[in-house]
Image 1 (tube, rainbow, N blue to C red):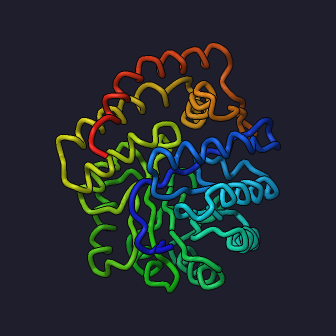
Image 2: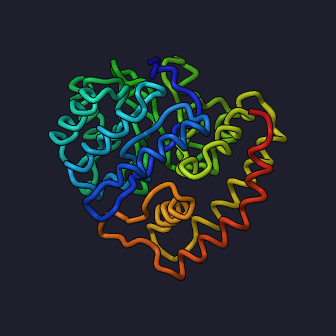
Image 3: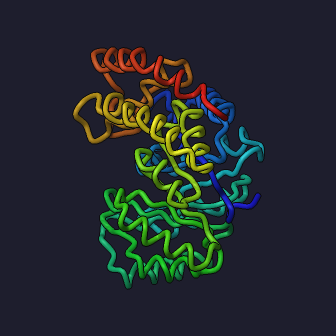
Length: 311
């Protein structure tokens, strides 16, 4: 599996739960098959959309086990190992390798904000110990630390680092990453925010890690493919549907967790999985669930049109 050449749509898979500490195994299997039938190019377990920071270590291992078991090598499996404890990151990395994962995703440790010197030292010490290829992950909104360009340049030169995912939403920063990539062409660059994926791929990025692809994988696959072939008109058309998702479904309720709550609720309404949230969050109540159902009904026509284009 050529993880160093990974391209396309790689959804950060939600973690279906029956309760706070019980995995919805059947739901996870349905979600994986839903993603594969939509044409995704890989899956990312234990990402932000997978609520990794709220899961127990046992639950994380269960997720990795069942994702790898269900994928059966059909697409690339990335596993997030970000943690406040480097020792626990290493344990999970080794477990993921044993279960058949293909690559790891490593962001910055959170809680105490690292300086850039400390961050580079962390990458330099951690990466050589990891048993699989590594994607670095920049998400300063959650970690309080941005991987600055000079730090990224040096970290991307480390053996075993094969890619970079940027969720900063800063297109100026992303263009600098593209310049770094043009100097070597040895690693994949993936966009995090789905509202920017079409633009990013048109600019030369290899793909996107789109949470909304859990719900509508074909929409995002078509968006990626349109951008890859340079069909700007089709990118604009599909991007508008993505923006509609962002401005309606994801804004249900006034919570920091609204994106994941909305996504899980919508997938539950479609019969894919349970919608329980990992603590400390609660799933949507009846009123919010009705709002999500209404948004899904209103989006349906647009999404059918969006996904009926070239594949």
